[in-house]
Every structure is written in C-alpha cells, then in structure tokens.
Length: 495
Ligand SMILES: *Cc1c(COP(=O)(O)O)cnc(C)c1O
Figure 1 (cartoon, rainbow, N blue to C red):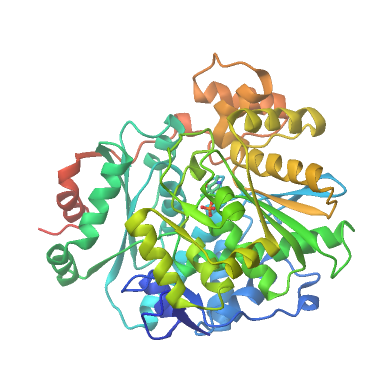
Figure 2: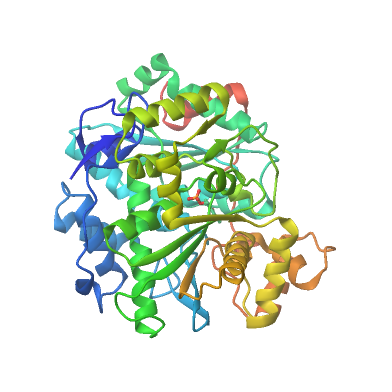
C-alpha cells in the first residue's frame, strides 16, 4: 500500500515513510492510495489483537506479520489496559451502546493510538536506515502529553520531552506527567501559556542549525502529531470491534447497518470511523458531535468552513478546536482524490480563514454525515440524565456525543442501533462530572472529587489517576520560554 499527498505535491511513498515523515514535506497529509476492503466474516470470534492485526496488515504492508503482531502484543494487553477486552462496549439499552475508549494508561482514547504508534515509528526509522535516536518533542495543554509519555516510555531508540504550561494544566494533569517513570522520559514546566509552549516547540523544529547540531550528536527530532497516519490507522480497529460486540449482543445481525456518533475536535476519531465504513463496515449515519466551538456543525450544514469566529473555552477542552486538521483527508476522499480542489480550499483557509466546497462535494458529505453540537448546559444536563436513567457516569466529551445523538434520534425518528464513542473516563473530568450530577460546585480538591465520584458512581477510581497524590515527583525542570534549546541539549547530554 502506498501513500499519497492530499495536495498532490509529493510522489507516492510506502507506509514506513509516511509514518516517519508524519506530514508531507511540502505540506499536505498522507492518505492511502486506495482503501482496502475487509472480509468481515474473518473477524468473527477474534479478540481485540486479532481484529487489530487484520486491519493493520492491510494498511502497513511493509511491516512483517511478526512485527505487527509484536507491536499489538506490546500495546494492547491486560497490563496496559484495565479491561481484558481492551475496549469494552457498555449497553445503555438494546439500541444504544457506549464504546469505552478509556481503559488505557491515561484514561483517554488517545492511548489506543499512542500505545502502538511509537513501535510503528521506531521500526519505520529502522527500515529507512536511520540510525539516529528519535527525540519526540511535545507541547501539551494536558492530556496529549501524558498519553505520549506513556506510549514512548522505555521504547528503545526513543526519547520523549514534554513541555507544559506551568499554570495552564490541572493538578491531576500535572501530577500525571511529573510522576511518569521510564528511563527516556522528560517533562518540563514552562513559564507561559500553552501557545507559548507550542510556539517554542515549533520554532525548535524549524531551526535547521539547531537540528544539525542534534543530528551530529546522533539525535533526530520528531513529533507524535495527531495527523500522522500512524496515529489514525489504529483508530479504525475499534469501530470494527464495536460492531462485533453489537453482533455478539444480538443488537444487530451481521450486515445490518449501525450509526456511529463521535465527539470530535480535530476530526481524527470520526475520520477513522469513515475509513472503517469505506472498508466495508455497515454504517448508515456518522454523527459528528461538537461543543460550542461548532465549526464542523456549521460546515456540514452549509458547506462553508469558517474559523473566523469567537473561540470558547468549554468543559470539554479536548474539543476546543477551530482548525480540524484531519478534515482535509476526508475532503480529499469524497472529492475523488481531487488535489487541486484541496489546494484551493486550504489556500483560502490560510488566506481568508474560510472556504466553501462546491455543490457536488457538499451533497456527498451529507450523504453519510450529520453534524450537531451541544452547548455547556446541554452537556451538563446530559451527564445528569444519563446518570439518572442508567446509573452510568460519562465525562463531558462523551456527554456531547450522547446529547447530539439523542437529539438526532428524536428529530429524525431514526432508531438504527447506535454506538457512541466515549473518549475519556469520567474521573478525568471529575469536577465537571461531579457538578453535573450533584449540582455541587463547592469542592475544588481534585482528590476529594475522585473519592466522591467513585462513591456515587459505584466505580473504582481509574488507575490512571488513583494514587497520584502520594506518587514520587520525578520531573522538576522548569524553564522560561527562551530556554527550550538549552534544556533539550542538557537532557540529551550535549555539551
Ligand atoms: C482528543 C480528544 C477528543 C477529540 O478527538 P479528535 O480526534 O481530535 O476528534 C475528544 N475527546 C477527548 C477526551 C480527547 O482527548
């Protein structure tokens, strides 16, 4: 399988190169040249690792069977995930199920990709005869940093350095990061906000002179960016897995269509569902759920993507995004691989902050997708409704997905069996969830909130956040925004 650029500006490359590069060097995103079909019957009765292999082998064709099975065994096992099913399916009723994507080491769905992607990356580098050690730089506003740390921790041939805004993350997020073990991990507090961290990291990536120094010392910078194909492809697996779970529960018979609802920001998770559909998963409607940063809802309604709008900070912060990077891949797919159109639209996005797709594309994209959004009140009310009706706690992101889906069903009368992607554990957004369920906004201590939530939800505290209070602090570096280059050299022991 070869990979081509959405902007038509690069020759086809193999999967290892697409993963090693992350982005197309001249701008653009790598997509598979064609979308393989899957023989669905083969998957029946398989465990998560088995399904994973059947999907990955179709896309990562220059990795051997032995390599892929080794990565899968290392990533998706009962030690790293606190469920033997890896991604369990929780049925609210006969027709509605919740795909719990948060049983990994950091309690959010990014683990499903970041537990396996480091293996893709190091093996790709080896295949491409690169002998340098890979140094992953991450600027984080909280969650991605920890998921990347856990993914790269102790992976041979890699180092990972995470920068976070000193006063810009929650107590739990900070403790999750600074208590990380492993012999190749570093976590650095930066005096500044998230944008400062991001700008610092970007400028380091772009500094050719500095990169040359690192290269001479046997290091090579890389990112674990969410637009890397190596992060997207593992996400296709769990949509097939969900379907098999629904078949097993007799919620659907094999071949019957389902709906999938996904709370989204960057359009990554729902794009993986789209690829699953293109591979043969029987899907009727993909429901794209946003919070009040509803740039995607408006896009599916009007065909106009417009990021010129007020930006809101919400209780579902991982979806507070105005540029949905992975949308470019989707538009490339539905426009019939029309790179000229993609170039035009994305040039307009850079220049004017908006673009409008043509009529044919607009019709095509709404054949399968509907968009919707939930505001803050709807999100909180949904958490309470789900808890009151089903005794089940959901986090704010998941609540956005459930709310948008419920209103879609009420308005359309569509009773197709539906799975909703649950992207984080309720313990991860404990304050909002506790407030939603009890109306009590008086407790600020996050550790007290975990206990309370555990009591009312009759659930064990997720191990990703349990015991953090007393864990050893292993990372104490603290820098100003102009000390990034120095601290990286110090960490890599470059004089
Ligand atoms: C990253 C994230 C999302 C958004 O996922 P996309 O792939 O960007 O659409 C949703 N919920 C949670 C909890 C996340 O961490």
